[in-house]
Length: 364
Ligand code: PMP
Image 1: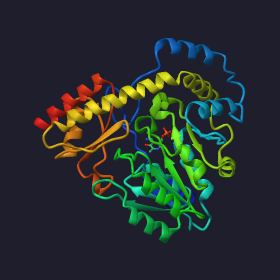
Image 2: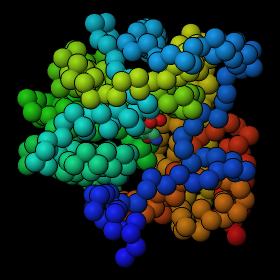
Image 3: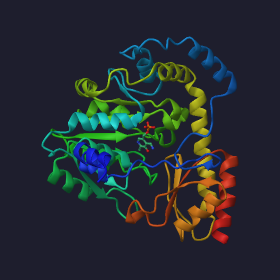
């Protein structure tokens, strides 16, 4: 064994050594329909104004540690209820990790539970924080298996239950009553984290229900709204809980450029909301067009992506790639997703390029 291998074996945890990295496909030159990005930039005149604002930012100073201005903008513009604050993360990815670090115990008995398939970072963050992870399979129609969820909660007493609302990669919204039943089942020992990353496309939220449940945590991101590049997630919960999470958050985790860009963009949130409305309309068109293709099963989506089942997903994925269209092949994630592809809704032009390439892939 080489010296570096010996060093790695004696320093890096065995489960980290055994883990695969979070793979992100290289998308240069492709029509990028794999990562649920908003395809629209801010309009040129706003980008020019933003550039002027950014030019004045003091890069030599640490960010203002309280983030008060950007937090206030989020509270005012993004529907956080009166009396509730937020904590910010470098994307909601960081918030997931902060939640896990805050709840992990040293004896590995604390558990993260989530329906499966769902967003992969719940499992990864739980594992890297040293927690147990329990995935409860969705039903074949991709809805929540509530009895199984409740039984698993009873058995494992999880500290955290993550519910992606709508769910990634399936795109559906779980029943509101089922989520409420889960929040209530966790009362007194566990936190229900409703992950509303796709809220701009679902327009359904638990944010206004925060005052009803002291164990409810609502997490969102500005990524899907059109600001994925600035990496900003936010999370709201009872102030006492936020104070605990905040102890785990690395100081200055939101850089000055992100703060200024977020403040600026949220001053123009109408522009972002209009883009989301355009994408909701494009989702309806793309769903209808896909449903007309023979042999394709289209699952209803409340997000900015659509899950489809095709006769042979690996073949369709490869043929799309050869036509420079990148989608996500989720068929290996879980047996309920056999032969499934996840397609991000984009501009009408990119959607029709995808449809042409996809129809050709199915015909060939
Ligand atoms: N939650 C869900 C359900 C997601 O699908 C994603 C991104 N794909 C995230 C959180 C992370 O978003 P970000 O880190 O960009 O805020």
